[in-house]
Image (cartoon, rainbow, N blue to C red):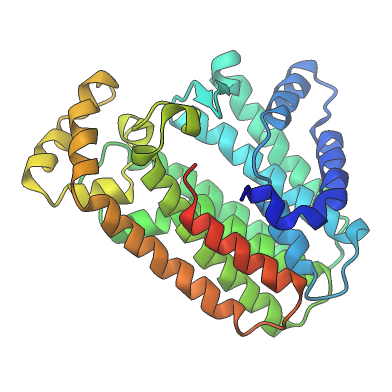
Length: 320
């Protein structure tokens, strides 16, 4: 089953959000406008808007209100991707040239900053002060995560705790806030929007760990970038942390630098796939996923809850 079929009943409202995203991306500066449109046309799963919409169904659902939250969160996500590509010196994302490769780092950084500013502007349509407090704190954490990602490049001595904190900021937090703000914008009570936050957090952690696993197990066509790109770029993910415990793989990993080529790490990639590192990583991902499902069990029964169950399970088992 394709991911988008799980929430096909949202298609009409997602088209509205897509149009709003296009409006948000518009700039008087032709270069930034062109860069933004490239980002939009690159597509993506639009996971954050989907979580916003579904979570708002635990309150009084109104697309004309909740669309602002969905657009704001997706715009922040787009901005973080542009910044990430600068940090990682990545030329390809989803099989297409990145903003930094098509133009340069300066244009990419300004494009990301523009999108962050626009996300805050869109969010002003939501009058609840709590929503703005939550969003502002989330943006601060995302930015701190980007700085930590730079600091920890090629740091093979970092701890599991450091990794988990980084992926919380990189991925889990925005998904958690998408769920929480969707519910808040629809007037859901505090108990529900707090539970949805934790559901989103646990799903987000599982999602990112799965992403990190796929960097080794998927094909270049499925990834839209070379296999092992994270490792080549110096991003230390869960499979790498676990592989470092093996003396043979540890020696190979410690030799990696920003001058290492994709060809040079191929033997290491084979060793990782032949070890139990991937199975161990999947086990940790599944623990987070189960916590998310346990929280869903405590929420009111409705179509949104059923769909969130299906999406969570899909995210934990996806292959691309």
